Amino acid sequence: MIRTNFFTAGNLTNTTDPDFRAINNSWPVSAFALDFGNIIQTTTPLVFAVGLVRDPIVVYQTPNGLESRSQLWQKKWSDVGSAVSASRVGVSMHD
Image (cartoon, rainbow, N blue to C red; front, side, top):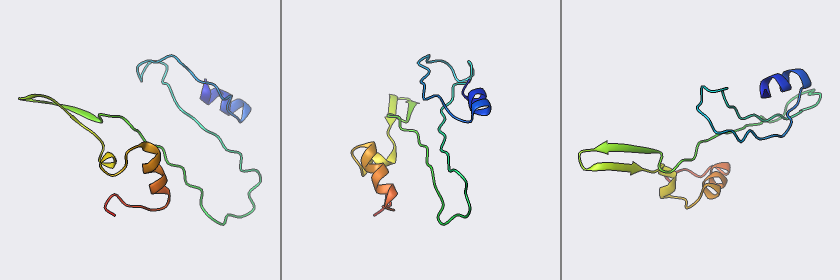
């Protein structure tokens, strides 16, 4: 529905599909659109980043039972907002 609406109308309807389902069931998607207007020339690039935050990121089955692993960024930053803000100003995981 999102793809069809964007193709025919050129914009998104700012709606949310609350129907949680498997990835291959009606192929749920996320989308965003930005109208740049009439571009004459470019000065700086516009960069978008999309990430996945899930904790734990993975769970292993070991001889001792299940072991959860978190994402590495959580060792340095206490919350997602802090990690994203740091990445915007070029802070490295190793700084």
